[in-house]
Amino acid sequence: MTTPGTEEVAGLLLAAGGGRRLGGHPKALLTHHGRPLVEHAVRMLREGGCGPVHVVLGAAADDVRARARLDGSVLVDNPAWQEGMGSSLRAGLNSLAATASSAALVLLVDQPGIGAAAVARVRTAYRSPATLAAAAYDGERGHPVLFGRDHWAGIAASARGDRGARAYLGQHASAMDLVECGDVAEPYDIDTTGDLRHLE
Image: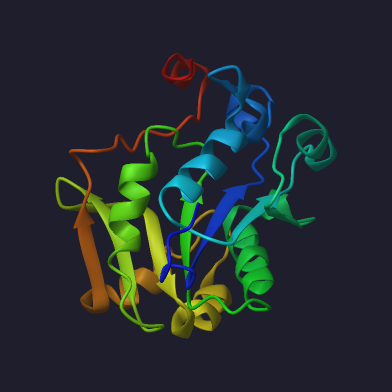
C-alpha cells in the first residue's frame, strides 16, 4: 500500500524480454517462489512505496496476462520489444506521461535480488521532477533507477537498443544521486541458464 505523500513516484517494471540466452523462455514467466517472476517484481515496487505501477510486456504478453496476477497494475504492450530494452523504456515512459506522476522508479524483471528495501531507499531520494537517482553497489551505479519527470523526454529520445537510459545518464552523471544499496540487495541478472540457480 502506498503511504501518504509518495504517490508522485510511479513504479515502472520492464518485463518484455524474450530470454534469448535462456532458450527463449520469457523472463516475466520464470518461476520464483512458485509464481511468475513478474509478480514478484510488481510486489517489490508496491512494497517499496511506488504507485501507480506500470508493467511493460512484450514476449509472450498474452501468456503473461493469463498466468500472472497483476491486478491493479497498468499493463503496457511493447510490440517492438525485440529492439531491446530502450523500446520498453520508451513505451513505459510514454504510458506514464498520461498520469500525474512526477517520477518513475524503474526496475528490471530479471533482478529478483533487488527487493522492496532497495526500492524504498531509492524512492526516498525523490525531491522534485528534476531528480535523478539510482541504487549503487560498492559505489557503482545499478538498479533501480529513479527518473524525475523533467528527464523523461530526454531519456526517451536517447533510449535505443539494449542500452536503455545509459547514454542519457552518462551525460547527466553530475546530477545523479547514488544511493548505496549493497547492504540490502544483490544486483545479479537472470540472463543465462546458469543464473537460474538464483530462483526458488
